[in-house]
Length: 351
Image (cartoon, rainbow, N blue to C red; front, side, top):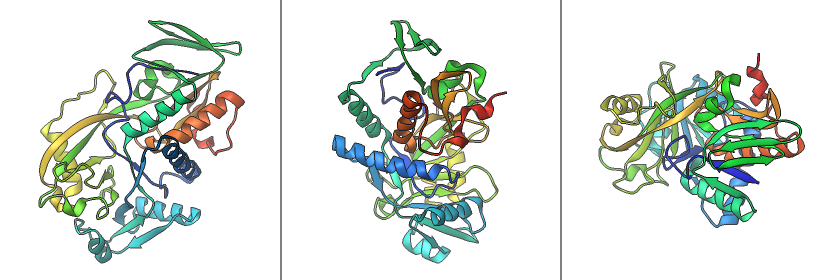
């Protein structure tokens, strides 16, 4: 097996950096995700054992919003359907458990006990080490210029050479449109994450005292989210808005951080976490590769069935990395997978 990457991972050019990623099971995005995320938990734990590396950090996860809000209702429905342990907390209990929160009128919190975070850089190193241990040949700093796939062979051309094989898997992240052409209606958006030192310090936000959280926008806009203070007493807490209307390409994205960027993040969180209006420690950009329905693309290329693709993870794909890898391998090698991926079919966007 040969893997080709135009950069040397882990890197900060795409969507797999930033020191933390949420992982959770009560998936409000759709019921078909839950068998995948449960399998992903198993595979992350397997990788932990194989590499002696802690990857899943369990803190509990809180979805906070109106009792009749989309995120709360869907989270509760998913948990009950799949027997995922949760608690529904009223406003008073929510504040008692997690004092930094100031719920809005009508708010409840859905606490998922097995949620937490992954450190993407650690996960990527562990995955690459496992792949090399299994015999994979990995080429870094080598950009793919073109590809071809038919029944007889597949071919990838780079500046360093031409590689020929039997099957091809393309996972190009925000470069997918450039690599795959117009086959998929993808758009790339600029995202900002900020590390902010809350007023009064981070003691109340430390792991064990504070969960990862997703906060529904009361006006129906983009949700916001954040993490416990995993970077020490002076590291602040990482927070962000999940979604953006600022479209770009990996080459044209504005990677500078502007005051207005941080102001938007703070404004999105201030009403429920007043102390978030503190000192900015740092901020960074990342990229979402969005599909029109915000569901993944996983499966055989609609026009090149001997090429398997995974793309369009729409800002919530990292936690699924090991199970998506297993699915792609199954499709490439045996033509099918046992996991439910019909809703992710690339053909749903084909004319």
